Length: 504
Ligand code: NAD
Image (cartoon, rainbow, N blue to C red; front, top):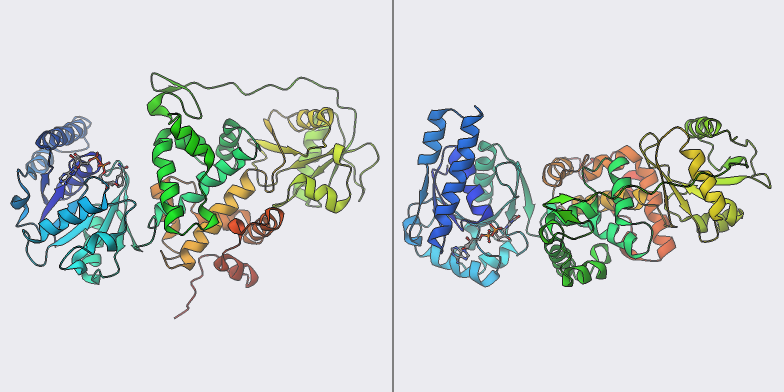
């Protein structure tokens, strides 16, 4: 359908888009107000293709043909014969509106105008055009040829045939095209808000250090990078701007609240890798790893009591305690001497202690969402005895698995973060931003999560996720954690999260 594609803006995104479509057979004309940017982009792409040629991933014939399909346009009017023009210029509404208006005077009446905007409303960009029905969002991710997903954004007046055309084009180029309406953050930048904002909230409450939170989330749910490592990689200035933009556009819905910590660190220039200092320090681009703090050896002189009747968990705990030379009590109540291990869901240790009338100084919480084999997580309450926490930590590490000790937090680290990711994913599906069968694939491809939000919900158990959220909402008294109706209904009806609303 699209044989001749114009790409405007030869920066990081424009050059990638040009390479993608030239590689899949279209003739691409690249334009930029800075002529040198076009030359640099073409040289950059040629260099990438040369490397693929050298590695044997590309034949000489394909290399020659692809290079020949990437042309330089020296003026906007040279794009007059294009049947699709994709803009990837500076992220400013008025500049984009002006560009599209200028283009309308040059291209044919049916030429599709696509914008790669990541944060502006497609509908507003199109509003300045004579024919807004031929304007759509085509939101790629960096680096374009490697990030095999694109959001095809339907503006309020975009005609369906243009959406279909972009989907086909993306699929021909080997990308997964996910259609979304024009809502703040579209799909991916919306769904990604839970991970970072919840991590910053935990940090602001002194739950754990950034390093601990990252380790717990890598070893538990299996994220490739923890939230603070990701902030450092993306640049906190970029991430904070997205957090603020989505929050503002949703009229301050507390689900999206950004953090004063990020604002302050941005002001201080602690942006991450690019400034050499973020939540971690970098030298020559390499992260300086801080060794994990080793605990002093203590004498374990008390039995343990566990609140859970789950046989699997009791066996695991009992085995590691006996390796430490300690025992697990079987009584319904703890003995007067026992260290009490409790397993709250979405409650903090303090709340559980006070609800069950347990001895606060002898009680420590164990996260049942953490990976038993990779990293265990213990949580103290403000009255927990330091000596007894040290005994619990040492006993639970007796088989060599590291144990992280954090401060009191409703939902530890993993429960509240995963519940927030699942809840937001459910809310996105509830709002019709994408379908329940597309969201997980899109999020895995775009954000690199080990599972999509709905699959995370099924993995940990949707009734447990709902319980975590209800308790978070009760403990904090905040609507930030209010469960999405999508999640609640499917738990109440015992249905998978992928069940659509309508069975037509
Ligand atoms: P960039 O700064 O690397 O490149 C922008 C290019 O556009 C520059 O070469 C500039 O000279 C050119 N330009 C600016 N105004 C122009 C105009 N009026 N006409 C023609 N050329 C013009 O920016 P980028 O990172 O490639 O981002 C481009 C767009 O893509 C933005 O809308 C951005 O929000 C979006 N986006 C960026 C990313 C990312 O990760 N960088 C991801 C998705 C979407």
